[in-house]
Every structure is written in C-alpha cells, then in structure tokens.
Amino acid sequence: MKFQDLDQIRERNRRIVLQCIREAGTIARVEIAGQVDVSPATVSVVTGELMRDGLIENVEQLPPSAPAGRGRPKTLLRLRPDAAHAIGIKLALHQAAVSVTNFVGEVLASETIPMSPAERTPDRIINICEEQIGRMREKTGLGLDQLVGVGIGVSGCITYETGIVNWSPMFADRDVPLKSALEERTGLDVVVDNEANLAGLAEKWFGLGKAHPSFIVVTVEHGVGMSIVLNQQIYRGARGFAGEFGHTKIDLDGAQCRCGQSGCVEAYVADYALLRQAEALVGVVAIDDQLAVQEALDALAERSDAGEAEAVSIFERAGYILGIGLANTVNLFDPPVIIISGQRAMHPARVFFESLERSLKEHALAAEAGVPPIEVHPWGDDLWARGAAALVLEQFMPKNSHTRTRSQSDAMAPETPAGEGG
Image (cartoon, rainbow, N blue to C red; front, side, top):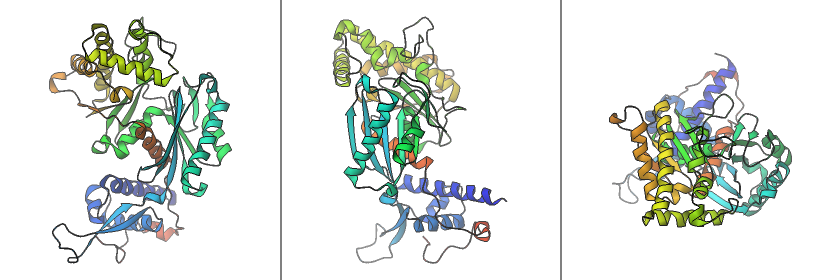
C-alpha cells in the first residue's frame, strides 16, 4: 500500500471517530468500535492521536448505581470545545450574519449587520467580511492561530473547490472570486458554499440528520434552497451546483422568478413571491427591508390562520406548489426524511403545511406505501452559525500533527496503549 493511501485511511478514520464522539457527546472507546466500521485496535490508535493533538479529552463518570466515592469511574471521551474555532458568515440580500463557533458547535459570539442594495458589490462584500472577522476576533479574543478558517454561505451557484460565486442574487457581477479575495485579505483559509448546504451540515452534525445517513433539507425564506445529504456526505454535483431545488420548473408559463426564468418553485413559495401575491392585502413591501418583510408575512399568516379567504389561498397555493416539487424530489431520491428549515418553518401558516403534505401524497409515486415524514426544524440564526462551523471543520479539519516514519504508518493497528482502555 502506498504511503499516501495510508495517510488517507488514517485521516478517514480520524473523521469517523471524531464524528462518532460528536454525535454521542461522551462515549467509551469500546463503544466507538461497536458503532463504526473501524477495528477496536485502530480506534485505540486514532483516539490516542486525537488526544495528543488536543482534539479530544477524557472525562470520568461514575456508574449510575455507584454511591459517591465508591466504584471505579468509567473513562469516557468527549471533544475539547476549545480545540478549534471557526468563523461563519451568511450573506443575505438584506444582512450579513456573522458568528464564531467552537469545536462542539457552541456559538461564542455573533452579530448581524444590515446591508443596503448599494453594498452588494464584490468589493464592498469582501470589505464587510474582513471587518466582521476582525469584530469577531475582538469579541472573543481569538488569535489567528486559534481559527481553523472561515465558512461563507451565499445563495446561488458556487464552484465549491475554487470558491467562485458563478451566479448569485447577491451580486450583479458573475464569477466573483470570493474565496481567494478574502484569503488574500485575512490570511485565513476560506470555504464558500451554497447557503442551503450550511443547513444540511448543521442538521448532519448537530440536528435531526444525525439519525439518518441520507436526508433532504429544504430552506424556505427569501429564496428556496435544498441540501442533499447522501451517505453522510453533502452532494454538490460535478460543478457544485446541485440542489438548486428552488429553480426547478413547475409551470413554464408561470410566475416570474428572480433568476429571470418563469415557473420556478421559488416564484410561488419564497418570501418575495408570497408578498407579490399579497399586495392587495398588505400593500407593496420593500423586499430589501427584512423587518418590513417579516412583519408583513407574519400578519399575512395570522390572517390566513383566522380564515381570511385571500390569505388562505396564497399559503395554500404555495404549499401545494412546494409539495409538487418535493414529490419530484422523492421520486428521484426516495429520502427517509425531509427536513424544512428557514423563516417559513419559524413562522408558518397552518394551511401551508397542510396543503404541502396533501400535495406530496398526491404527486409522489407509490404514495400508497407511504411518503417520507416531513420534519420542521426552526433553528433561527444558530442554523447558519453551526452550519458554517461544520463547513469549515469538514474542509479544514485539524490534521494529525505527528511526524511518522514509514514503519509507523504501516502499523495501522498496534496494541492498545497502556492506560487508554475503556
């Protein structure tokens, strides 16, 4: 076996063990070996390395039945919260949400700043990101050496490997080199991804997705996004453009979408689409004024829940269209669960989800055998903060710091080191 292959196997085992510990919170080595496809001896080697690298630590726990001061404590493992830190930035049409998260996904500091349409230029966005990274470091006292990197979520089509934003409603320009520009400014590693994938990673690492190796996340707010998780991996497609669910077509002669085409799912379901349909009820609302948008949509949902026919019709139609889109997704992927996040999950109208579920059952093939359950998970800002942290840590996971000889690398499964049983 090649030296490089052994390094890849070792890195894979580190990630598997770390994720197992993350999901469990605290866990014994022998239990890790029972839950993952790694031998007990290799688990012992990997956990020893992770402990020496400062990524995990021991915690002693008395058996539940043992009286205080009696019985042998059980040695468990857990992640070290301060082992790594990541800065996350979610860029939206109206604001930038910035956060610092530690290795276990705890949000240490956060800030949301408004942005005007005039600020949505590449140069200004990069300046804002640089300024906010500095603000987060001031708030937390973290040095550059304590930051693993920066994760940025933005809507649109992003080439994941290069961090180039090929198209986004955020920018009038195309092919914005967001990753390289910000790395040059800050000296930090940067990873850029579609914002919906941040939701998928948050669910995979910290949320409902921990119970499923494969699932779908749909985000519904100023746009409609999708994250596809297959066998615990985000599926981004050949260029990084996969998951543009909001721009799948329902009616080619239908409503105008902000992408410039017609009949997209988003053109009926997103915030701007709902308000466009509701102008006679709530008046014209500036889509860049997020507070006004949220107040108008909350009022519209209340009117719908109160039974006002026009408001009911708007949410019923939106739910039905989304149900058709999800039925197409079910027919393609057959996921075990669909998770809905975003503002519509936080401030729903009852008829919206009732219509969605009815439409899904009507249009999914083999619906008589059952359709995937729909889980509504309203995270709030923690969704994006934790997703950005997971994005960074997946891409820039702290590496094995030890220099190894070829003979050490070949010894993939030595005996359990003394004192590390459990």
